[in-house]
Amino acid sequence: MFKNMKEDIQTIFDNDPAARSTMEVVLTYAGLHAIWSHRIAHGLYKRKFYFLARAISQISRFFTGIEIHPGAKIGRRFFIDHGMGVVIGETCEIGNDVTLYQGVTLGGTGKEKGKRHPTLHDNVLVATGAKVLGSITIGENSKIGAGSVVLKEVPPNATVVGIPGKVVIQDGVRVNHKQKLDHQNIPDPVEERLMKIEEKITALEQEENKKER
Image (cartoon, rainbow, N blue to C red; front, side, top):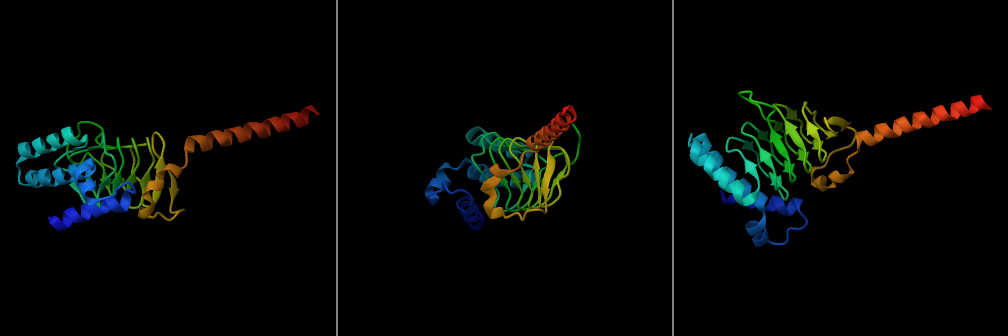
């Protein structure tokens, strides 16, 4: 248990340049508190103490602003940065070295039974305000851009942006999970489409000017 706690603390130092001391991390990082609370709740959930597990998760939500259902399965070195408004559903499965930012939802799409929440493989990053909905899989080393709404499967080594989310990079750039904080440089497919339209309009205007001459 203490080995896992030490690894959780080190994960914050590896991912957050604002972390200055172990005491600061242990006492003030809501994401860390939510993860530790979830470990207790998940252990109770597996032993079918459902009410007690849910009560712990709700108390954790009250103090941290992060809601993790006790049924969710979470791997090692999970990092929640800031975390306010993060929601993780009951049947979510999260791999190792995954990072979530504030306002992220890993949710369902309706009242379906069984597996109804996303599966995130290793080294996935989900940026601020993104929504990943339904029983879909996000491949390893993939990035979900801020504000995106992802409703379909995402292959490994991909970058997804937009509403609905679309893959804009796949295997074109090597993904390094140690550079996770650089997610502000994710391309904007809407801007790219508008630029193409503008180029076509310019080309048509030039052709029209030539005809008039």
